[in-house]
Length: 239
Image 1 (cartoon, rainbow, N blue to C red):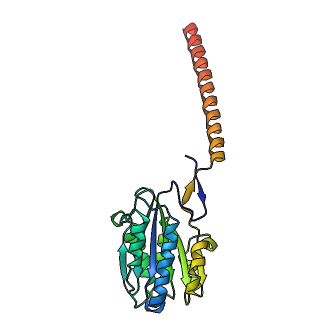
Image 2: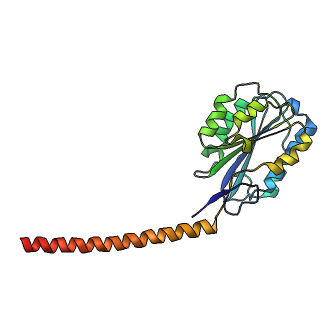
Image 3: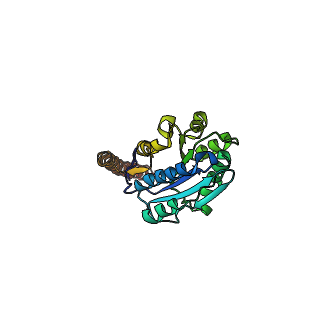
């Protein structure tokens, strides 16, 4: 099957993807802004093809500790998923982003956490401030394991930490705004490279090339068979 990555949040027609949101629920976010964050999550969910066989979504909230709101695969339709997001209760307290990233790699994207083998993994991290613990090792591990990481920061979020979390190229995986009300614009700009679509022209070219190679191999095989027969005949004459 010929595929290429389609850089958009359009509903994916044929992509199986595991997406986990890692959401900062620290005290600095504030209750009214936390409601905006939940709306932002659901804006992104609206663009995914949530189903049993395609997009699975998990949600993790963190502050001074980490709380799994729901694992990958629990909800296989948008309505139930969005309702669960709306019910997420605000934790408050601190900002332990490093601890949350470790949870993402060790638990959320583990088979025991609902992650599917051989399926693309996308992590979307939202924060509004500097982490109170070290994020370097955890951010590096997530990317080394092949997870596509997006970092979204609002307000007092430290941009160097966001860049450290984001996958390469950073410009496509890192977003920042000073205002929570601008998160709708971020949702529209956020491009997740998860929608794999077939390119008919590309596929036709590959199929034609493969057919020519097969024909050439068949012709070569016949010639080799003929040569082998002639060699065998000569050996019989010599004997």
